[in-house]
Image 1 (tube, rainbow, N blue to C red):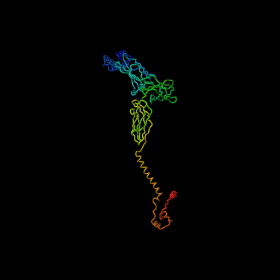
Image 2 (image 1 turned 90 degrees about the horizontal axis):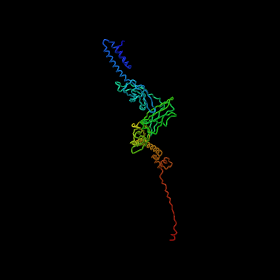
Image 3 (image 1 turned 45 degrees about the horizontal axis):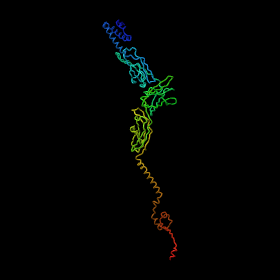
Image 4 (image 1 turned 45 degrees about the vertical axis):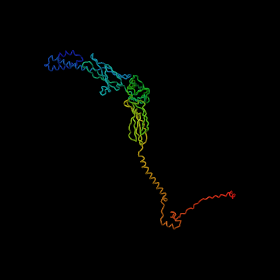
Length: 449
């Protein structure tokens, strides 16, 4: 291919990093000139070369916008619960061109999906440090350059860097606040290590506090009992686990909100009668009374129960209309309201009040008892009648026998004896006991005579 002398001469003044674009476009111009040489003179060749040079400049501006930060490095600062990203400035940045950087975090490995985006920060420095608990699940960091006062340069493409993840010592870390200034944190051991330790602190404190009372099974630590602080006042509880594996130290860090898991003992309660209502009086919560709501489940006569609520303003009591014919079954549960956090107690044991009585029980009992009583009386009457029927209903003698006995003095007549016919009534003599007492005459009377 024949090369135009003008083009070769101009190539000597092209910067090295722009030679590629210029050469490509210059060869294209040469092909056009060689294809139709009669249409172009030396003047038109110069015009074409100038146009292609301008095109190369535009391409160069876009290319400069793609300049990216270099030498990315991510490091953990376990003592301060932070991660630091460092990078260096691009080498070919024009003097006087101001830049700032945008740092983005994602929850998936690089290159991340957009839906895994967590948050971002702008900075003008060549490093940025963020608190690990601001993005506890971050696995990928991205950085891009934004150009200011750099002509047509705007923003570079993003550069991604995986955030190194330490080996898991534990998993399923949960902390439950259950009484005044008392909280338990538990976990599942993933990597057995003889020197596993638990540390915690508040966001406002930089000093890690060690666990004093561990909960475990044998030599394996699976929990820690925390006490002596009002943990519900913490914005967040920062947790750190330390241990060693194959001679290398390992640290795991977690973030938990104590208010997200609150519980208590099931409330105690009493059931009393007041007027026509049952009064269910529950015990008061032992902390954060304004944050609790009691659920009182009441069922009667083996029917589906009804749910009542009790709060501080009602003195944790509920009034329920009472039906004497029903037995009431009551249980109570404490719920930590969403305005303060989340959590609840277990249901209390069921208490029973009254008994199930049928309102028509007397009528039913009478319908059963009266016929039975009458039947029993009839049976007894028949038995007595059978035994004394001869006295109650004596045999009536035949008239012929009656007249026969009237003229027959035979006492041996069996029929007469049985019927006592022919025996005249002879009244028995009445014996009268008489006692006579004779007193002698007084000798005085004889003297007077």
